[in-house]
Image (cartoon, rainbow, N blue to C red; front, side):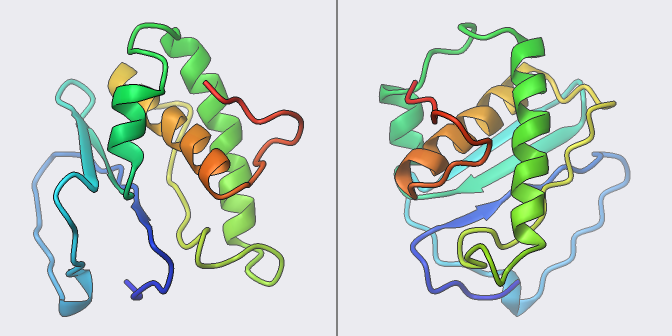
Length: 144
C-alpha cells in the first residue's frame, strides 16, 4: 500500500472468513488516531469493511440517518451504482485524483453483505461526496 499525501485513507476489504492467512508488510502499517477507524463485520455473511477516515465516525453518530431508516434493498441498489462510479474513477487517475480514488472496491451484487456493511458503505459514499466536493452519480448529492 502506498503512503498517502492526503488526510484520509479508505480501506475497504471484503473477504471470506474461511481459513485465514495473515500477511503483514511494513507498507501495511499506517498511523491511525483513535476514532478514525470504523470496522464493520457481518458474522453471517463473513465479510468486513474497514474505513479509516477522520470525521466519518462523528458523521455516522451525529448526521447520518439512523440504522433502520433505509431498507437493505435500497442500500444495496445505491451501493452498486456508487461502487461502479468509484471504480471507474480509480481507473482514470489522469482525470480523477488518485489521492481520493486510490483503490477499487470489490463489491458484488450477487453477495448478501448484510445490513450493517451496506449501511456503512452507503453512508461513507455520502460523507465522501460532501466532504471532498465530489459527485459520484451526477445530479444532487444527498446531504442526509
